[in-house]
Image 1: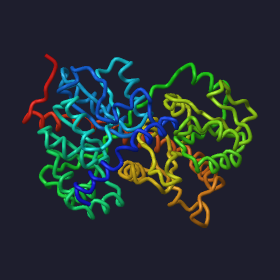
Image 2: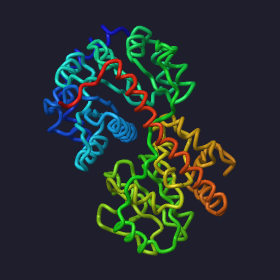
Image 3: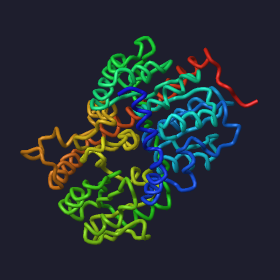
Image 4: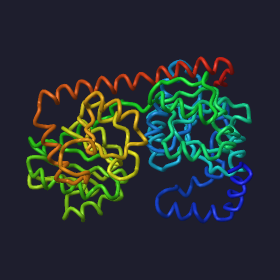
Length: 433
């Protein structure tokens, strides 16, 4: 595909974009009062001009983006930061940091129509653009570079499928992947892929993932209420599950019985009632309910309470990996020293999972000897949970290895910040006067 054809498609779609956005708003995927962001017209203070712009997509990338902004702020205390995201949940995360006093601004990512991108760059005039992970929009990146704005790819990676798609579009690939002044790749294999797509080898540094292993804050009052309700039972946390994964978690809860309390924390809390109905009426956090000693399953359908759950859990099943979602950030439970069970679909976080698997922290259901076939069931999950939980010495080793790995991952943001600061010395970033 050429840029001409790509932009023609956007021009043909333009009359339908308001309808699409209204439909997404009705499904909770957009915020009605913020739709102007998608057209490149975010309602931001004029002081945002000259900021360091960090682009993320969803929650995982936004955690890394916030961590990187904090690391940069330690050496560039007068710099201003703009974080763009693509999802409502990621926007809420940025806004929580803003409410807590962090000097951030937020906008939703503009759609990649050339006019919308031009308007966004005119409104924001960033001094530096940092694109996190794997969200490579042709117009957004190429026009940023064309406006003499330094571009950096951080925590950069491409899935195999995305890489092969780009190889079939060499003209666009060259415009996108030759744009950055620096690429911080997650591993050697990713560095090779970037080179094959047109990134000069001398600007690529293999640094690892910038997804953070920082501990989310636990709520002492909530933790105490849950401890009182749970008693001395062990806790299995099925974190960030997606539609299509809950049935196996419910089956695992029933197989484990009342010796364990299984907590399902869906990635999208609005699915809580659906999960509760499928389980036969498990209590829900959204209804102010707590589990009794007779419950072996609890639905934690709420926002911002994962830190409390990680602090209480004995073992985590990480969702998004049993259906083709790509998995979620394993460094968060690792920071709490937790053993992690995952399914086979981890392509969005492959580097983190590989490192934690080598450290003995991650147990991949697709690579265990639990069962005689490749089908993942709740019964097999329960057997693996019991196997891991029964070896107390191994659990102590896992806790130590997990925390050490998460701590090392945390330091990468500061290393990346130092590299970015050195790069920006060539083209100084505008700061507050």
